[in-house]
Length: 95
Image 1 (cartoon, rainbow, N blue to C red):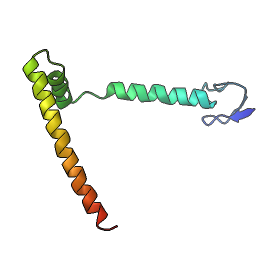
Image 2: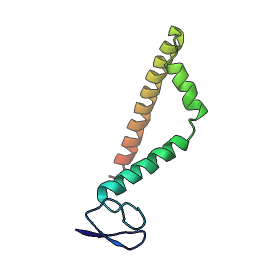
Image 3: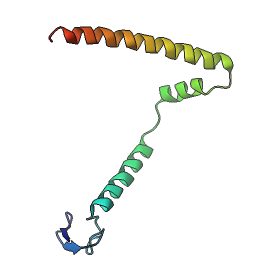
Image 4: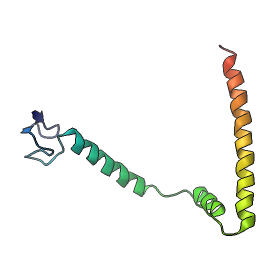
């Protein structure tokens, strides 16, 4: 099966990468290249300070901090459930 390279326009048969420019031409090679690019981009994104702080709070060896995290998470879940219910009731109005 002949496949045209989207980079240089060369026709290639039964290969994963273009013979002329080494650009991926098969579906598997394109998906693998996209995955590599996606992984590189996620490595470049720094972790937010709040996320670090919450991670330290959650994984602390201090039992007081661990339980306070669990209590805060419980109340946050209750709060979000109430807000979700209110938004659901509002969405029922227009029907």
